[in-house]
Image (cartoon, rainbow, N blue to C red):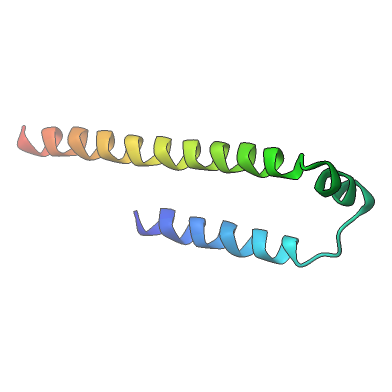
Length: 71
């Protein structure tokens, strides 16, 4: 679980460094039309889905490990 948290922190730090880059013309176009919010929403949705899947698998694996220890 600690490794998962470390990976999440590393990914967040990587996105912060990427956002510090100067915006390109495509980014300016997306911002001017308001579509940048759609892009951000889709990325957040995917990210939240991946985190939810990891939490679900971690809990399921913990139950399997507990059942194995009881044998």
